[in-house]
Image 1 (cartoon, chains in turn yellow, brown):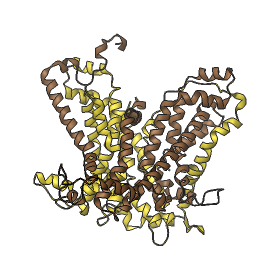
Image 2: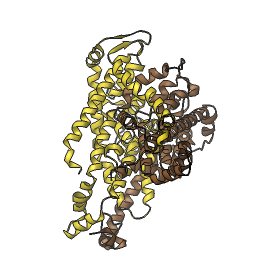
Image 3: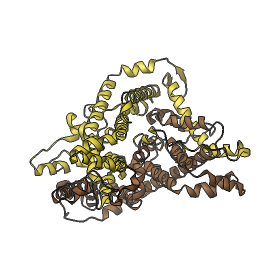
Image 4: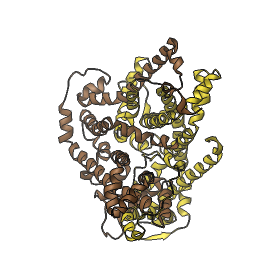
Length: 316
Length: 301
């Protein structure tokens, strides 16, 4: 399984590729056994590690199992999850994380990328610096930031803010500031990737459009507002929904920074799924864990479908 | 207006026109903005890494009392040696490396053979398989967590659990739809005439794969390799679940749990060691990294 937190960039597949030229089938007489040989690695790995587990997840959400005996229990798992008082907290926290991540993390890469696109010298240096946090292993980043967030006056952030007479702040120890602190670290860790995507999209804006805008007397700001941003519409729409899908599945930050605390203020849906399955003193409640993950997947699927329906004519 | 008729020097203009660039006031303010941006990127992007590098060779007391001191009172190079030897970072580092190499091999094997079969050999039911592979991209990986764990606990046909073996990480990594689609799409755009010419010259499907298609697909193999190694290096939750034996765990899993047993300066040295390889890989293969990261935007056009 690839990491739940390093989502591949689905945007590549969001639009149909340029239609490949129609091709005749090569090796007509080999079709069959040789094709099967080449398909074997794909078939084995996907059947065993993807297609069957996906089906099994659906089935398991209606089952109760202790790994020795398994029985169907109808929608009992869903009922139990939905009546768990922690679920509401986890959903609200996850939404809060997603909202904060949008506020902190959505405009920032766009502004940075637009500014960077006008750099004439040493552009590579700018990109490298912006992307560097993305290559730092996430666990290292979180553990390092946990130290930065030290609540004492000599904690790294408190000392820096102390220079301008602020603080000291309790950061991770306070229920109100813990989540924003997590989001700042998560934004730092991921902004570089989005910046690079925007930079690539910015190079494909046709220069003629800027020429035309200038003929109409547009200032730099007007050009950004009326040419650059509309030209980035398609990319912006996709990064928006991808960010929502990604933040709805946040795990590493709450798990390593706070373990869900203080006072459950950072427990997220994924953390709850993990606790159901793997941190249960009575043995893993696999039924509840899969039921909740299926519900999360369905909600995200519906959200994505509605989003693309609503924004349909925007990107063209 | 046809683009080819345009003066060459105007081809790569951006938001600011070349005429504007010649005006001193615009040039000055743009340079100022870029200067500030560079400083900010330097502090935010490189700052934490430089701090970590400093803290790795600073005694604990200095780091705690004056974390922002530019010059520590004492330099303690032993931190690195102690982390590497006594805390056995070397073992976990080796595990991380073994896991990454295995994941890379599995992903390259699955994605190239699958891409070749689906794009070049094109079996009758190829479209169905492509659709089924594509569909898995839209299933959030959290759905797979529990059933995949149970699969590894009791894999079909093997009769023995894969828990606490590297296979538990290597094998599931092969079912990566993103890589398969990436490679298939690349193969779709290779010139078909070459395949036909090779066939006319007597090359069979294996020869065509090994001697024609693979050598032509170095760029995409580079991209898949970067994705595979970086994702494996970053992975945390899955190795945490399937490798409960500390002796087999990679750095990402081990670092949070050793924090409790060791001194802060040694711990920060361990963090620094864990960061070196990915950062060096990035600096060496910078272009490939940034091109892969920008792929999403580039394909959408």
